[in-house]
Picture 1 (cartoon, rainbow, N blue to C red):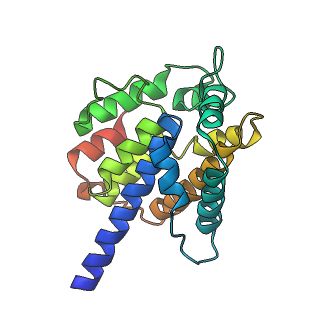
Picture 2 (cartoon, rainbow, N blue to C red):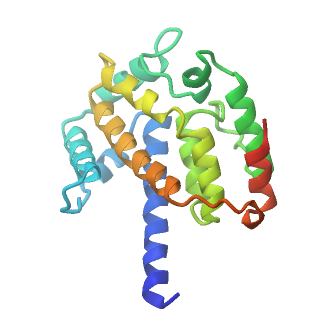
Length: 214
């Protein structure tokens, strides 16, 4: 691999990490003034794509937002009374209930990968913010490992989640967040579907364990 290829890969890895961390931050809490400032100052690439449209929509939504409305929207959308209009947990989308088998599987796989939940994090590990953070942590690891974790724990339900947000009455700013989430995770889904590695012998033992877990 020459220096240009290596540099391109490093830039791509950095960009992927940053997008996952942006999504994680936006879904974990209502955006802070600093996050809004960051979004409004984005330099969006001039390329006709779903990602470009999503970034532009998010930038506009950030420009038109105010802190009070954002806090209320986040509360109504993701917390509510009992539950919000959109449920950011894998278990709910995959089984219809909270704290079910998908959460147990995620906890099992995170233990295999040596990833521990920080003491100050309150939400269960199947929260979309937590899963985006996990993939952000793995972007420097083998592509096969990222593929297994993404395809098992994010791919089966992110479309259901973003659709829920788009249809929610209280969603304004978060419609643009959902648009970005859908556009980016769809790109990642395509990336990993094109990167199939059939030879299991090439995978690390932890990947094999994650793959084989029932």
